[in-house]
Length: 291
Image (cartoon, rainbow, N blue to C red):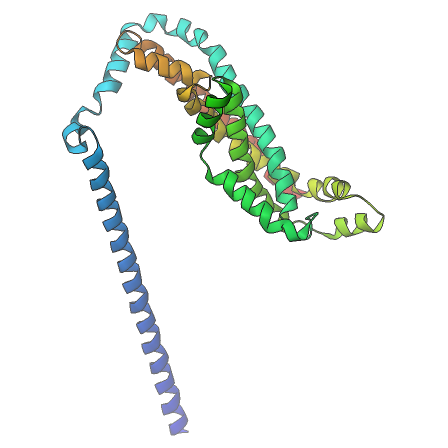
């Protein structure tokens, strides 16, 4: 009995020593990873600063000069602010239209691709890796790169922005939708297959009712992102309020009040859309969970 007790105590000691060795090894790997990360950050900052025209350390004290000029001129011309808000409202509506249309098109593309890339739902199971790589490519290429190419081909305007954002949205939502599809029940698909339904009928009647709340939730979240993206693309000539902001900022002193009005419109719009879409997403997800 004493031998068994001694063996048990020795085994516990061995387990404890092995655990402590694993803890030390994990801490060592964590410390090395953190050190590599810090070195990469420092070296990256040093390279970026050396290639910068002025240098960060020489110019950081002037970082607040431009915002101060904008706010100062906007305050001096604060009586004109309501009129400027009304003036740039059509450009804001154009930006919202770009975001809405691109989100709708991207959601359709992402929904179809996600079903074609999900096991148990795919029309061509052997082509699943192909559709997944296509979504990866759409998601990896930034919208501004696609927009610049399309502007060179099609000219400036909202159409290149819609296409660029829709392609990126299709890749991003396709990835999210495919993860939702993985949790869908396949029994309705099997039942529809037994009565001779087509692939489209099986997806529309057997899958979409299950995943629609999550699809809409992700699409609304993407709509918020696309509002910002459409405003940014305006800087490269894709129309919308971003184009007006670039014009007012490039003009310089004398039109900073217009830039302030555009900033206010963008801020209020993004806050409002964030709040409304968050409420809608919460309602959809809670309703889907109750169902």
